[in-house]
Image (tube, rainbow, N blue to C red; front, side):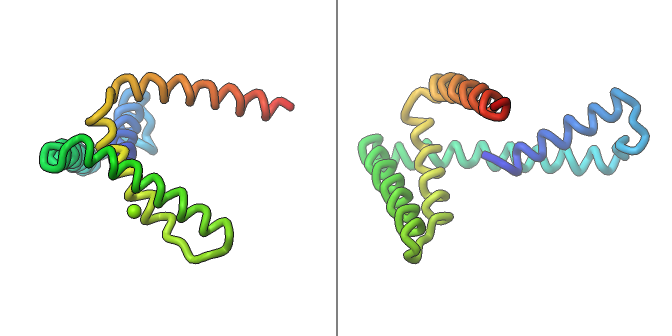
Length: 136
Ligand SMILES: [Mg+2]
């Protein structure tokens, strides 16, 4: 998901905040609202379609095969970053895209809520480390 969905949500929230606070410079027109709504609707549909594709791929090829794809794509990403670090030709961006796709499938295979909970804890811990490091 995601930067586009994030941006669409952020845009709607920004417009809402501007209206709530009565900020003249930021008050959206009716057309702005319609465009923002359309963007968000498109992004949500794209997200739903992506999740359906992840589920379909698992149904078609099976959990074990898709777990193997996760292993392979993450391995290709590791190799491409290693190549880049050693000054060799690499395709890091392509391998990141591949890894993100199989990790979307992993969210269908494994417990997505648990992943989100753990991710939040780890991001909170990282944030505390950043704050502490900036104070030094
Ligand atoms: Mg790959």
